[in-house]
Length: 187
Image (cartoon, rainbow, N blue to C red; front, side):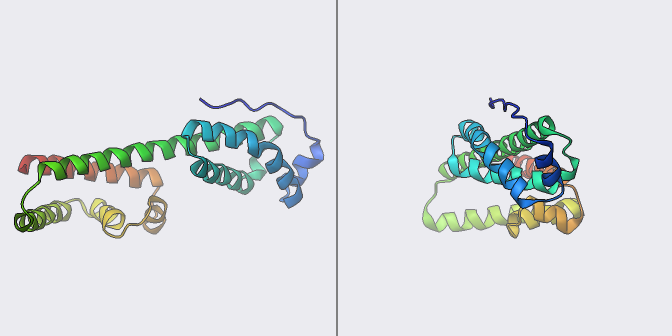
């Protein structure tokens, strides 16, 4: 899935400087590892723009956590694991989004009605969704509304509500499953 990064035996001074926050040492490490990491992530994602964003995030993460890096082996593994996890998450989100778009397209094909009738069906469906959302548990409702009504990203919601990002994802998944199940009973 991802390429292995070989050890290059950097001088200890580079790591010490990097861990101390030296931009030149960080740039040296970035220049040395960027191309291999980018190649591996872009091959996995098959999207160069997304791969570039993920690799940049991985290096930012590395810099912010530089004091935890013990040696060159640890740096390589740390950078690789962060980038891999971000790429897997990105891929998962992309699959979920594609699945949702496909489902919306399927539903719109099934709901083909005349324009006058469509407005009534559309309003009825929105009303039903709103009713279901209002009956969600308070925190789940708040998370759902921030994500889908206010278009806030998961990181922002987690920060605003002082929750873990995974908790926000879990609550959204439960809300969407509940919504889907209740809507299926109507149709």
